[in-house]
Amino acid sequence: MDFDSKKYYVDTNLPSEIATELYEKREEFTWWSGGDGSQFQVKRKDDAGKWIGINQDLIAKDSLLKSIHGRAHGELHLFKFPPGRMYNWHVDGTNLFNINLVFEESPMGISLFKLEEGDYDKTTTHRSLSAVLPVKYTPMRWLIYNAQIPHTVLNLSDKTRYLLSYTIKKDISELTYTDLVAELEAAGVAGGT
Image 1 (cartoon, rainbow, N blue to C red):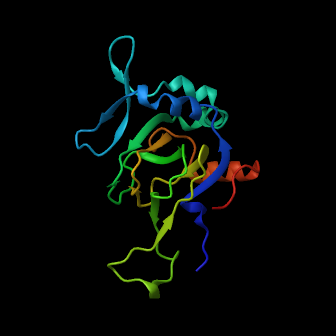
Image 2: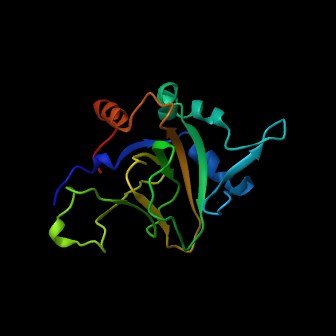
Image 3: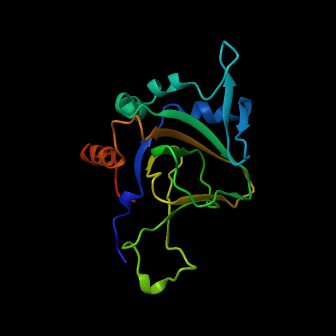
C-alpha cells in the first residue's frame, strides 16, 4: 500500500556544520541519565556551576538551525543509546517535532514509527501486530522527525549510537512540523522518504 510518509519524517539531505565537532568531542562530555535511567544526554556545568546541556550557541553555527531558530525556539541535545537497548513506544510529551542527525551508518540502530490507520492494509494485520515505518537516516544529514506520532528507537548493534537532536517544544514554537516540511520542499532541500 502506497502512502505519503512525509507526515512521519523527512530527510532534508542538509549537512550540519556542528556535527563533526560534537562527534569528535563525544568522549569528553559528561553524560547524564534521567531518574528512570532511560536516556543518556550530555550535561555540563556553566560558569556558575549549574548543570546544563550542550552549548546552545552552536545553533547559530548551523545553517538550518539558525534559519528556523527565531520561530522554532528549539534546544540542542546530544543523546547516546547503549547497545542492546530499546525505547518503549511513545509520543514525545513536550516536543512537537525534532530535527535529528545520526553520526554513523548503523543498520542495527533502528527508529520506527507506528503507522496510523489508513496508512497500511488492515487485512494484513491484527491487534497483536503493529504496522511500522523504519526511518532511513543519512549519516551527518538533518532529518525532520514528527515526535507526535508513536515511535520507538532500538539499538541492536554492539556499538553505542549517538544522536544530535534539535527539539522543538509544543508550547513555544511558532513553527509546525508541516510548515517546516513545506518550506524546505519549496526551497528544494527536502525530499520524500
